[in-house]
Length: 297
Image 1 (cartoon, rainbow, N blue to C red):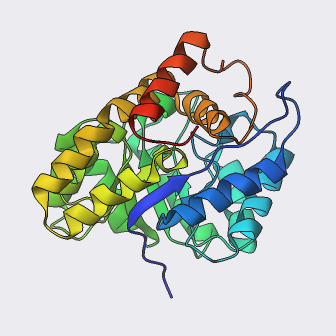
Image 2: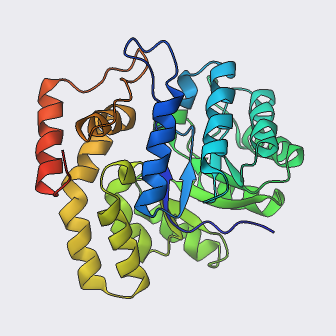
């Protein structure tokens, strides 16, 4: 049976030792337990927040296996398997499937600029290699590849198990076009925090976000208000959390989420170099935002 993904999909961090050299799997387990207890609807390891691009193949497998075992089918899971090569992405997708993932997410990252035909073949090959649903991920800011709506819909039509789209360009018109040209049949998910309200209004099935690591009640409240048709309440909840959502985006996902977890009592190390953690001013700003939102520090 195909897992239905909806609502708030919480993205995990990958904790490291203080020097950034060693994985801290027990801290990863604690962070996952926090997300499960918060009430999120699904969990997504090894995305941008999880620094999957900065892990060795062995580390990636350790984090994927540990995360899926910790989740233990209590919630649906979607593992990011993106890699520079098609062969690498296939290896990761098969590993995720073998260890119990409910879906995989694929970002067509590349050193060389990819043609539409190359991107399509990338998804075809991964789709043929696993039986899992695939979430197509469009995020040109991190991948260097921007897939137009026409290409996204072609991939959905031609690759049977590409069944979902995560749209992170920050352009709300992309979501409107996915809804309109996909005739409401292509589930799409918001991947840009400050667009959460507009995305749900445009018909997004869910919100893929690292924010529930810090402010889950506000994230879930927004989704619940939208589902209940309580637009004024949804607006109020969204604008209440918007300064935090903006800060997370501009400060960098691993840096801000890891600093926030540390402020709330869970030490998870800093991002892996060359990425820096928040500086003193950034941590002070984050502390102020969390305090304003009533987060226990």
